[in-house]
Length: 407
Image (cartoon, rainbow, N blue to C red):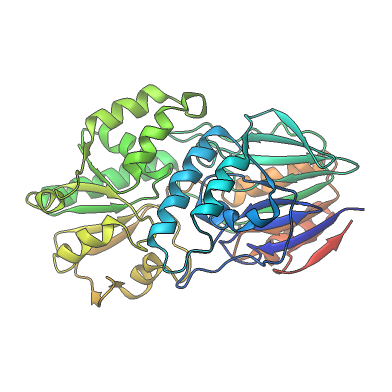
């Protein structure tokens, strides 16, 4: 008998957390205002982190009272460290303190792709998920085989190779659903339109403020812009993350390209932001969803400038500042909310599988024997579960947070 408990990330994007018997897969936060956390009151023997984004790792140190083993890839460990330290600084009431963070770091064991470790009777193997550097799908094998995709992308990007889908035998699939029902645009055409927009802004003597996630997106946008002869400024946590990723060349598609892009970019030093605004510039900066970070500094100076643009490069979770910008053309700058005269554009540089890729992935795993599928991490998980049931003829569920399944 195996018990699967869904602690977060069901019928929503954010706070991913699933418990399989005594093992927790991810334990993240939802970046809403205020942040939302997974269901608590659990006592895991181990926690396996799929990748270094706060919606998957952001609350994991809160579990240290139970002294669990922590398992992740080497880049995920380094990325989690920097993200968790930063969240302790900026959150009003962080869900863990320095002691829990230190224990989380001490309890962590790194394993690479295709390596297997045994945890409480389960054989755990990680596979490249193609989402960000170090991201992993998690395969668990005991008397039953379970595959958890985490966040996954099947196609190559400038920064990463697509996911490894040569999975072992699988009975139960737990699959992300972020872009079910949505097709991503052609990547080359998307890059072309994005670069044209940045160049147009600079030609008009404006500033292109490009909010980007520190992990993965900042580095991809650096590569794209420098490839097209644009020298971007880089601000925020993406600066440190780029250095971390350069130290993990085996998890990058072409580390030489990344290093070249980093050399061709201008790092914004502390106290030098005002100088960046003295002439037209493209600025890649955190936070990707505009919930803080240097992006708000630049926008606070430029919101009345019709020549300048906010060019969003990623998914904007409902309730975030970025979501508010798209829906209302206003932004919360902390002490005040202002109407934007800056143009706002969004380019879908997604690090997730789109509708076609999700269906391809599920079909492949079902063809290899999966009999049950759970759809999570999305706002349309019920429709995805229905498609799987009707098209592929297997049991499929869109669980709610707090639900438990005994298998």
